[in-house]
Length: 359
Ligand SMILES: NC(=O)c1ccc[n+]([C@@H]2O[C@H](COP(=O)([O-])OP(=O)(O)OC[C@H]3O[C@@H](n4cnc5c(N)ncnc54)[C@H](O)[C@@H]3O)[C@@H](O)[C@H]2O)c1
Image (cartoon, rainbow, N blue to C red; front, side, top):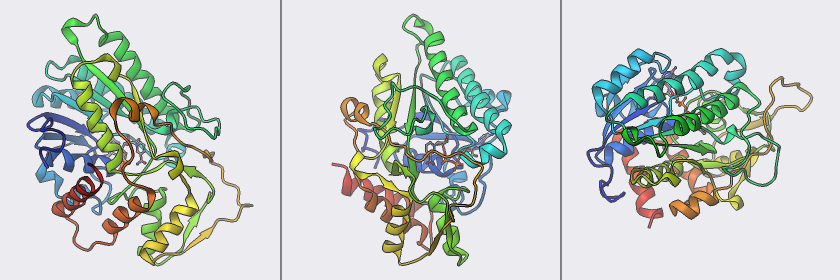
């Protein structure tokens, strides 16, 4: 697998924040297989059912358990480990939790971003950083067209707002410290804004697939709050492939690539919540759901319609979605219903994706 990206990642030292979580653990496995030296920095995993534990990433990476709000610890790790590249994924990522814990969400996602940027700015070894924000960073006007990278930032709930702030912080560091005049401190930074990512190993609360898998495990019905909400669902390896393609472009130092990038599904492949659940039931033959009665008032605002315009990534990175939602569901469900998940099983799924879908 080392040669998939032309061998670019072999022996690169990469600091990955959020490696104990859903997306970070997949990225850690891919980078490991590409021959990179991965240093992870995150809180302890929130349960033992995700890939950090199942794939034994504690042993497979240089794993540091630490809080992104702890600047001294984070900066110390950057100084000691001397990464060339930083991928920042650590965050409080749940919209509903952000209503209950707004302060923690803002601190983790805003102060955390500042801390990683400060450590990056002062590091002599680090040249490139990508900050993983979200599609929810856009001001949502319930538009029926996809949001593009030039659309206005916004964010209603604390999570979305904190990620819009993280975007603004990135832009400020880029302009203030890493511009063309910063000859001695030439660094290149980008953000990526992805849609609703699905894949094995996600057990976060208040997310559709984990909620459904938990319901199946507990022999209960999934309660669906917003069956007609539309989201840009995509398989976890899709944006991560784009992310790695972007890294290679950025490494060459062209300023154009130091910007924001959307990664999402094609606009003909977007679905409602209820359609995703129906597809899972059809593929697995398991699970039941109930639609929450509309007269139950829900205090939390959630957007109804959200899709992304991915023209920029298609045009300038030559990236595009390789699989449709049906295949994404197959890859995802295969993981949840497999008995003996370990590192090698994840590598098998990654190899299958690259071998069968990426030319
Ligand atoms: N899952 C999605 O659909 C999706 C979509 C768009 C963007 N994102 C973004 O991707 C990133 C990863 O999300 P995920 O889905 O893997 O979530 P996750 O909850 O599974 O993982 C979050 C990671 O962040 C770490 N973390 C949280 N608070 C921390 C703190 N105070 N200090 C250090 N580490 C901390 C956790 O330990 C974990 O490793 C987040 O930035 C999220 O906003 C996720």
